[in-house]
Length: 523
Image 1 (cartoon, helix red, strand yellow):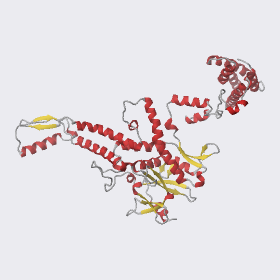
Image 2 (tube, helix red, strand yellow):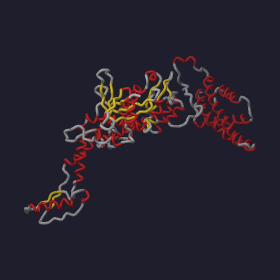
Image 3 (cartoon, helix red, strand yellow):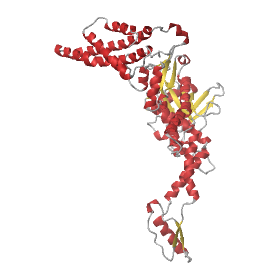
């Protein structure tokens, strides 16, 4: 076993050993100086609520999206649940982290520090076994002078003296933010440190403003000259009685002709509130997060515009992050031969879902156009499939130009497949209900009683429900237009007749009805 491999197994930093290491403040106050006089680093920047909100929104959104490993098919794709990457990306990244926790951690590293770095742990067969996040603050990327290969030098947090381990690039999964060389990304906090410094300085000013607040607030005035002793005593007594938030609203006791002149907030103090709002919006621009996502009320926003904001957030903010993850995983975790058969992909449909009515209208259009099957629509709505709903519906008034010659030419040719589909559904339902009743009702009198009710009440209602749409289509071919009530009435009469014959045990009943109805020139 290579030395670096052994050392990582023995001394790998796990979150359970020292969780504060991931986001604690730099021990020596390291960071970048700014014109505002505030030292900024990725940790202090997250004290700005706007920055914290942006990082949280991006990290939570990316980590919560369904992330699947797929197998390429001749046409289309299928989930490769048997592939070793499927459970790592979807369920558990390593023995101590769920896939959600791992992806949120790495995405937060990228959003705050520009680089999200993970060690790839392999099993004995050379397959990916787990992904372990590394602290990007303790990683340095260098190119070997002789081999020209890239190596990541990682300082083990738990080792004495800061032991450094050299990891080859093929042992690292590296998710990057904007980069000038494509190898190591820039830190968004470092680039925009002045913007963060302004917000941090404004927060500190407001905090000190309230901590040192005095009520009543103003100036003490007297026409007499105070001795040094009287001045010091007055100052100490007044600050002791009225300094700080916990001493607001106390009465002021004045003597020796002293007068209190209150002072209101200056225009600069009032503008500070606008400055803090601007700071939140300003840092939102860095990550492409709009004000509505940061809970900043916008009087111009409406329900419709907020929905469009969500679509824009998905397309212009979330989409680049998902593509970045997908391509880096495809490059670093799949072998060259595996890339021909497998790929990984996020499912963004959940972010693009509209309200219930909009979704149902969309499904209806897609189903009627043959673009989507009814079971596919049910799956998108998190519902179980139903037998018989896997075939796409074909619109009768549309056809490919190349197949026009093969299309039905008579009314019988058009209606025959429709009635075949209708009576197939009727037969399946009839057989299912009879089999279920036979198993449940073992006493003969109860079975006879059930059959009587089934063919006079239950089954006719179902048959009528299936026949009604066919009635409307049949009438349209005959040049008539039936209302829903008219179609239901015709279907009800036919259903009653059909069930009477079915109760008598007529042979080849369904085929007979298919032929009889298809041959009818009009309803």
